[in-house]
Image: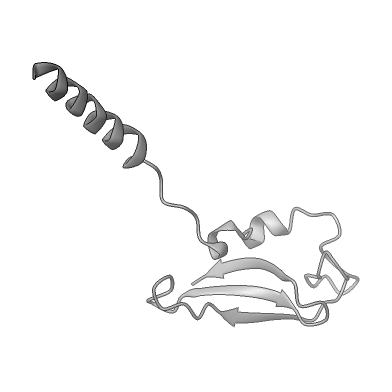
Length: 94
């Protein structure tokens, strides 16, 4: 009987150590680079010194608010996307 209790206690300890202590997964917004990381790219600026899309070279970039209410309850998170190729380039927060 004591063997079963030891096995169950060991399984519970392993469960709490391995399964419950995992860090929370990052959201899609959190995986985007912030502007500081994005601007380290060599193709970042055009002749007018504005930020450009690293995929197509367009300088038409739009800031859009993250619409997810659970991830953005204070409405302070934004993402920036290229108007020409529609690629999301970086994130920002106010």
